[in-house]
Image (spheres, rainbow, N blue to C red):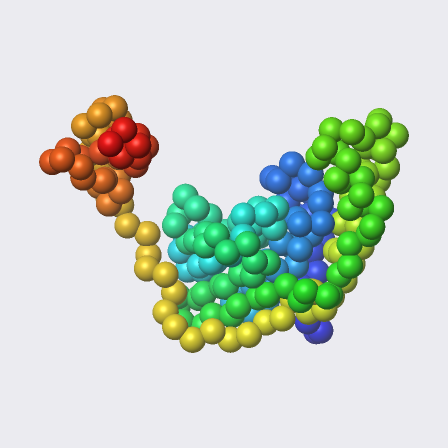
Length: 207
């Protein structure tokens, strides 16, 4: 079985990914490919913390990774590092194997018309006809990406080093200013008072 065959996604699963995210888009398609590489290299869906994903972006791709790998923020096995990179590292706790999956910069060229229409939509100047054309191109661009071999879009490299620590449950303490509970590891101390981050920031702004 080829890498491409092992990385394919059936239409029903794709529909579920799209339902989870809200729409089909090129970013989601990239995430589907990254997640399929992770499943191929590291293993199947993670019901608990067996697999850990470290994502270096907060774009649409991360939703596909959450859905297809089982790595989620709530379980603590999805770690976000705000580097703005189309890059994802996947760890398998059972034996320590890890791979970093990085988008190839020149693997896929965006359609100029699609980009121009997107700019108009963001500016609020697109007509109804232009919006309809954008939706049409958005779908076709996404489908074109999904039809590619994942290994054409991403490079895959082995990673040395341990996975992030397993999630821990911490006690909550009341903020001395607003009274809301805050995780004990996130408390900020100021003048002998235990504050949540927003109240700490507000107090510092007043000094």
